[in-house]
Image 1 (cartoon, helix red, strand yellow):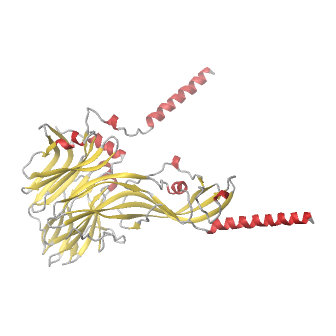
Image 2 (image 1 turned 90 degrees about the horizontal axis):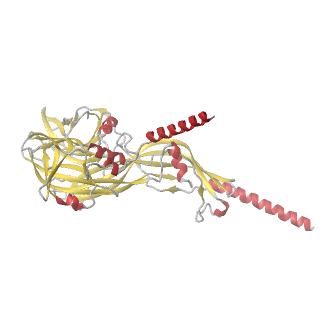
Length: 292
Length: 226
């Protein structure tokens, strides 16, 4: 009888232990913070294709700021550098955009504008902040491939309304008008070094929100002079992409031909960023790394 | 003679109760009280996929609950004192679809330079019905809390072409369900007093989309994207 009671108690204790270990633990900022780190930068997979003639380029990196006051961190930043240091781009300016906040942290975005100095490719993966006392601190910010081209032909096409931010990577959407006097054969998006991102389907329609537009495999589309269409490109296996990476930035080129001559047109950037759920916050903190 | 008068009074009283009861039942069955807490989404060309739907209920949270009748609730002109509470059940999901609500062009900047949007805004689920319904019943039927709302964080800036004015606006995207439902009204003793049958829709926020357009003047907005 006594043995039976002990067995029941042991079973109960074991059950409680199993249940406790199985329960998902809610994210608590204090437990995630270590070594007194108070700033956590987001990690990106990005491709930014520019024409040398375009307006200034920009990189936007949201971060979590656990400091009490603005002047504990943001207010004392004197200058910003992108790493590795290179001779293709030069920082023009930076500013900090305010996002939302809760009692523990604020979500801010460091927006960096840069000038393009010459054609070439550079893989930016870090950020160095110089503070007013000339001390510095550097973080990884993921992979930003900046691709500057001097062989773009921009005057024949014109961008209209376009989608610039979605909470997840699903599609790339823009309105395009042929402002030349010749047919332009649209071939598709051009970008590289974005792991597993492949736009394989598209919709073309006359209106920005045509729900009846049919999805097709990507093929050539001839845009006649003065013709305007909405192009809506879709990625393959979006669920897998969004599970593995929360922050994407894509600024591709559009490949088109006129008189059988191949040309590139720089498109706009689209940001695909998480919506800062508890899971996103945990992801940001877990993946934050200081640049060595 | 006196007994006949009493009997007659009793009969009249009973008849009155029967008539009142019939009226009450018919009133509930025939009268529709539209109820909504949101703007109806528009069917559109949605970003595919699940996104990040908010307010999803787990199986332990799903139940139709009694809703006490508040003193100021008017049900077809009948005193709410006759009704103590009501319960709503979703009978069937008749269709599912994705839709959006366009919030309009929110910020502009230019000429040239950058346009910035620093935003913290509330996103909400919602529902509508053409009869009086209990939120909990609709939530239980569609699988998400139809009154859930939360704050989204977003800050973003965009380079504007020189000489042009840039505008940023945004959409909220929703997974939507159309449903049929019924609400049964009970008196203080738990006896059903009538049932209303109706239908409606419920929407669950799952994604936002920012749109960008340019114009030639600070007071000319780009055309609405939708």
